[in-house]
Length: 218
Image 1 (cartoon, one colour):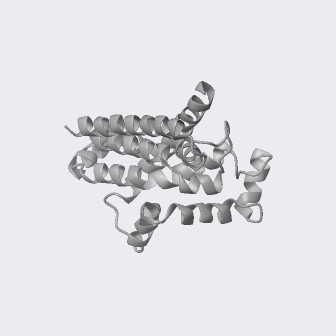
Image 2 (tube, one colour; image 1 turned 90 degrees about the vertical axis):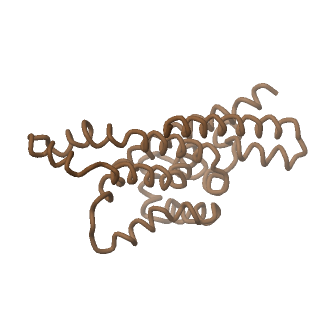
Image 3 (spheres, helix red, strand yellow; image 1 turned 135 degrees about the vertical axis):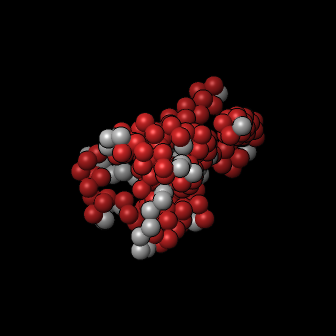
């Protein structure tokens, strides 16, 4: 009972943590590029970044299967890198979580960077700061509240990912079974005790995450 209960929780936190790091890196990179820049087709690119927010999880899962399947060039490259198919592995769950959580981090980071007074950044450039130094010593500290909020929300979203993960990573106990998929299986098999315990753990974690977001904004 104890092992069955803690295994999906540990795996969910591990997957969400790895996904969170990837999402922060990608969100900061693309958020900074897209903030305060105007170019032809920008609205199309941004729409693509935000698409996973509105797409049904099954559609996201289907697209991941198509993109990373063994018949696709990307899937064959993944097979070569990992020496096994990406699907039905922990890294498939990380990929699914990263895709669905990225828009939240991107939006927050972009909003934080857009709120920075351009005169401050220009003054740093005049003083000789290169773009990397400017990014890490000026832009990120000034947008830190928005970045932290986005990181917390992204972690919570990755932790709760279900549909795309189930399709792309499966539901293998101890390998790809996260809390949401474990709840689904427990409910389907009539094990209400485990379903309630896992649901309570998700509610507790999500509540704490939202509290953290509230405190970062206050």
